[in-house]
Length: 227
Image (cartoon, rainbow, N blue to C red; front, side, top):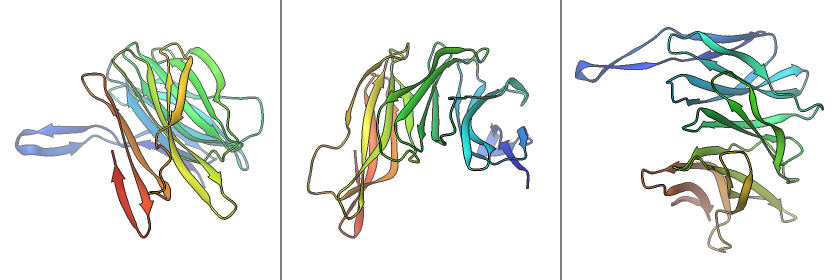
């Protein structure tokens, strides 16, 4: 069965708070599975889209494209190859004020991978590379946001096995505007009051340059939100 990535396009505000949808835009028609699309707007109001695609049975690579305001493709779907047959997973993207797209993804073998792309033409500014070494599973969602200096803040999950179950914990990493890892640490300090952080989390930067992290964690039989 063909799998088709669809951009469910712009919502236009109308008088009286009514809304209308533009027509669907098909950006790729594939005989393989194309999964988990994420998107970020560029300074020129185009949409930079990232997803992962099956190029063979059970093997997935991250791909990207850019969609113009009229729904046409200003960058054709482009696959990021890492020269092996390891599955890519859980991609995310953010675009800074210089129109540079910062793409992060996990691999099935663990670790966080990174590349930087010129969102104007799709050329690589930083070659695909492993940013953070980790042997934890790589199928956990991530989120990224630029701050006022165009450094990128990445929120991702890492987990550990205590002999009985996996414990999921959020980590925060900072990447410079030119792709250098400035550091990373656990976003939750050691605290016996929580049992396991869930996959539900988010990150945002306010107008003063402060970065805010929100996540849910499991405590006994209920879920609490920490901020």
